[in-house]
Amino acid sequence: MSTPRESDRVKLIASLFSSEQGLIDQVIVELKETFGAADVITPWLMFDRTRYYEKEMGWPLYRRFVTFRDLIPPEALVDKKLITNSIEERYTESGKRRINIDPGYICLERLVLATGKNYTHRIYLSKGIYADLTLVFNKGTFKPLEWSYRDYADAESIGFFNIEREKYKNQLRGIEG
Image (tube, rainbow, N blue to C red):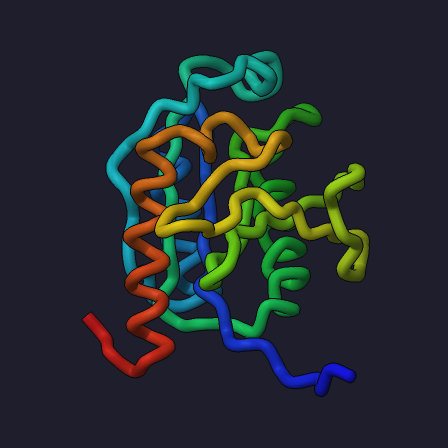
């Protein structure tokens, strides 16, 4: 029989993309005010692995990943997603989003994203939010799964997430840096 125990806290991350770089930076400020200090804000990345969002948001699309310093309980991801949904709604014009914000977390074993859409590999959490198992950590690196978004599966993203996992591991050990 297993003995239940509380999970370790996890490292909150967010992906933001939009055709408006200024809006991304403005929303990052809002996220820091809401979620706490950022550890890392990536340089500008192109969001060009899909044109799925072009009709709604325009083109080209720019992206930044943000990681946050304060660790959170994994179940807090539901409320983080509800907050980011409300921010997206505030910046919606004529029924079209101007920004997409995808919160998630890194832990030692995996990278999880929050979504409001059900699918076979997604697990219902609560309040209409599902956990999307996006990457798994195996043999020294994050690895994509057959359903992983291509932009999360590319070498540059995986390299970034591996670095952030190491920082997270040090946080768990009480080593900041």
